[in-house]
Length: 166
Image (cartoon, rainbow, N blue to C red):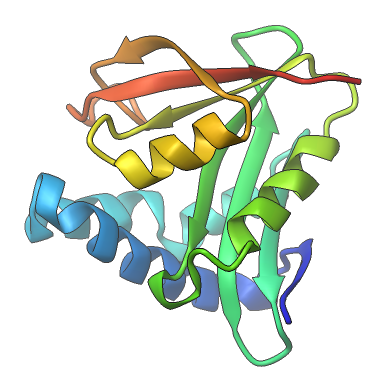
């Protein structure tokens, strides 16, 4: 059984390995191995993960069973959109998907921001499993972006949003 808890410094290497594995399993067919290697080196480096861990007004969680980490999630209050929390990452290792781990991490992240009125995220348009997951959790499409993740990624994404009920 996996428990959702706040991530710590000691988790970062396992989280990085999880992200690299999950990104290759999910995105190689969309972007190619080279682009996924480039993005994971930049976005999922230990320094990048450490910065997320230390970010104010943010929550970084892992799903842990005491032996391994099966999933991770990271959300933070937006600097651009008032009363909006941005779900930056929610990933579960492929061998543990469809067991409720993503749901449990999402539920935890959703409750960590009592002042937020809505949650936003970006998702690959062709990632139908992720889109179905988010739609099942109350998200709807509100726009698109030509640069998912950062201003120069060149990766288009759908922007989804959910109003949070308090």
